[in-house]
Amino acid sequence: MKDTCQEQDEIVRLVRASQAGDKVAFDRLVRAHQPSAMRVALGILGNVHDAAEVVQEAFVRGYLRIGSLTLPGRFRFWMLRIVANEAVSRQRAARRQATMTKLFLAAGLRRRSRRPEEREDARDLQAAVERAMVHLTEREAKAIALFGLEDLSHGEAAQIMGCSVEAVRWHVYRARQKLRVLLKEYLE
Amino acid sequence: MKDDRDIDALLRQHAEQQLSGFDWEGLCSGITKRVAAGVRPPSRTNYWGWVAVAATVVVIVGVVVFAMLGISKPDVDRTAIGEAKVIVLGTTGAAGRAEVAFGATEELGRCEIRLIESDEAREVDQERPSWWIVAGCRPSVAEADTADIACLF
Image (cartoon, rainbow over all chains, first blue to last red; front, side, top):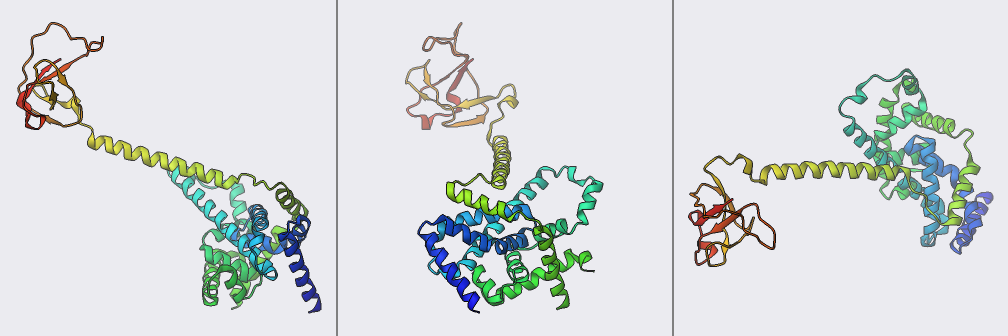
């Protein structure tokens, strides 16, 4: 308990130093929070490379906006909200791109059967999760990443998502329902 | 409930697999460099997004323009012999010279045309027009009708 309080005090000190323009202090905040940020981004996107880009972008945005953080003790939730929003934006862009690709290639180029190596990829958990996450709504993806993966409480996830606890419960439920179907073969 | 936990466990397993051996130092130094430089690199995804949007806009605008041309453009080439494209003109008050106002009030109709005697095209501003349309005189353009039109090509 004492350690947790000390850690929290240290976070507050680092946030205040960052707000004063101390880049070394912000670097320490990054090191302390990047695993959480990566898990959330990965939970939404399903792809480690995209997640790393999103996390990098989110921390840069965080640094630029850190002056607006009035409660330094809430840095973790504040940062995870930026990460989740950034990841959802990336997911949205990827969906748009996929839609455009489908439109342009609607002539049937994509109807060709998959190559053997692609079939191999399809069995891979990483590829399966990445494909499955596309089928979730933005709120479902955020909810499952924050609650199911990052292990936050419903209340904490609700604060980050800016919605009610009941809404988080519903989005988690829907996300699990969809993932249960989409990842069925990996659950057996 | 068991399935719920299975899903969460599967996602955690996936995350652990993805993050095993992940270059945390590289990510951190990338952020530090960008924060120090204060420069945002161009986003690959956004770039392609904009390309896709631009391509869509071009396609849609093209379709709309073709559709509008097909609807609104008078099909002059299909005018049959004996028909003429009639243009109601504002005149100068004397026969022989007219102020041509294409598109001001135009309609596709049928009329008698009277050729004015002339052996050669007249010069206007030291250039020879390929054709002339001469209108008869009425007090105002509003009163003019197709019977007033004479053409010289």
